[in-house]
Each structure stands twice: as C-alpha cells, then as structure tokens.
Amino acid sequence: MTIRVLIADDQMMVREGFSVLLNAMPGIEVVGEAVNGRQAVERVHELAPDVVLMDIRMPELNGIEATREIVAADGTAKVLVLTTFDLDEYVYQALRAGASGFLLKDASARQLADGVRVVAAGEALLAPSVTRRLITEFSRLADTPRVAPAARSAYGELTERETEVLVLIAQGLSNSEIAGRLVVAESTIKTHVSRVLVKLGLRDRTQAAVFAYEARLVTPG
Image 1: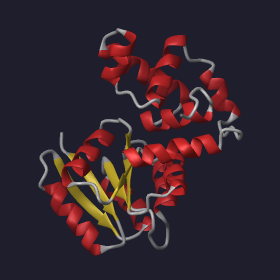
Image 2: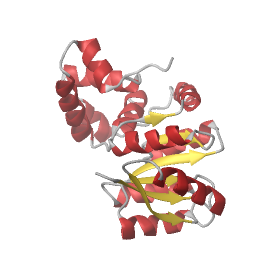
Image 3: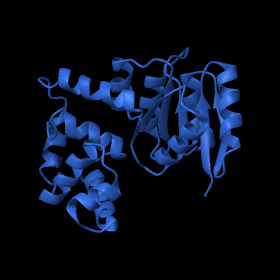
Image 4: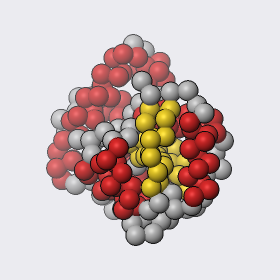
C-alpha cells in the first residue's frame, strides 16, 4: 500500500524539497501541502493522509497545537515532527500533543523516508539526540506525575507480561528485540503491544513510552 503524506511547513523551499525527495521513494506519495498549522488541520480532513510531516514554528497555529487538533479529531493520521530546533521543550510538548515521531530537518532523504514508513506502521521514531533530551526532560519532571487518575486505573488492568512489554517499549526496544529478550515469538509481542495500547487508550508506541515514563514505570537513565 502507498503511504500518503501531507507536508506542513511555512517555507516553500522546504515543502518542495521534501515533496521531491519523498515522491522519488517507492511506496510513498505526497498528496498535499500546508503553509501553516491551521491549514494542516484542514488538509488532514480533506485528504486523509497516513502521515503528516509537521514543522513546529508556523504562523496562525504552531505545529504542536496543530498536532494536538489532528490527533484529537482523527484516528488514523500519524504526525512526524520535523524541525531545525533541537530543544527540550519542543520534543516533550510535541510528543505529549500526540506526535508519533520527531526528526531534525538535517536528516538524510533515506532517514526521512524510513521515518515516514516507521511512523505509518505505528512504530516510535525519535532521533538519537532527541531521545537523550527526552530522557533528560523526564528526569526533570520526575517529581511531578502527569498521568491522569483514569489512566493510572487503566494501567492496573495490564497483566504482568503486558506491563513488562510496556517497560521494554519505553526503553526503546523493537518488537523483535522484545521477543528476543522475553524468548517468545514476535507475533506474541505484537499481540501484547496491541492490548497495551487498547487498555491504556493510546495511539502508538511513542505514546506508550511517554505513558511509561510519566507513570514512573521506567526510571530515566
């Protein structure tokens, strides 16, 4: 299946550049562009893309708020945040808003295409430098639990094995790596991951990782 992509960035050269790069990749099609966050929200409703490449600093509605609206209103589109600003506040805010991944704009064409595929498949995607900063941010917020009571109640519904899988997701392990660690089939892990997401009401693995840190199931560092 072809992955349909919407590019949201206020710079025309960036939009055109990404469009050329992605359209040249097999299995990926750029179906539209948006010049600001408000237009991005509207285009998602009109075009139903699988993945939205979202800049953070845009006029009218920034990328973080646009991501929050898209996630709240749409059950399928995944947001991959792209920015030149490698700053803690943006990483954390974007993920809490519902972004499924975070890449810097200096990523190569292959990294960008791979990122789109990973996010479209429901996996988590964080640039290495971003991951380090994210862990630092969680450490800073360790004394301020942010998981809502309802979510904490849902966490109690997880089985011991599902909780174990959730912790390993937060540690950055893939399904195959988790399967190897727990000595079970990868298909079994996929089932566990799906059940974790359903029970906690989460969209994808990125949100599961955020939940695990905020619920203090994982200690940063």
